[in-house]
Length: 131
Image (cartoon, rainbow, N blue to C red; front, side, top):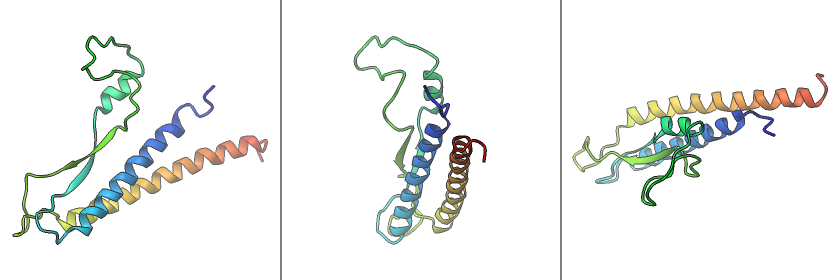
């Protein structure tokens, strides 16, 4: 029996994403003066497929095919941007962009924390009998 209806798990995965994004942004900012450092970003992969996989069954016809269905791997990955150079030393960290992304991610993270706190607050109210 799933008393949370999947909401807590979804919020947990979203918090994992926001934490990974924050770590990546911090790494980018820490390497702003590192020669030939290339920025990294956290992106979703197969989000639509993951959402659809819970309702669709598929047959894997070859062991080399990607599995379809419950995927234990996260729905995001870290990618490196090798296509640009902003500085003379081969570095492509844009401090303004990274700081903007950091602010957006902090707002997103705080909204997730507020939402999960609300869910647990509702459960606490139910457990206490509505008081």
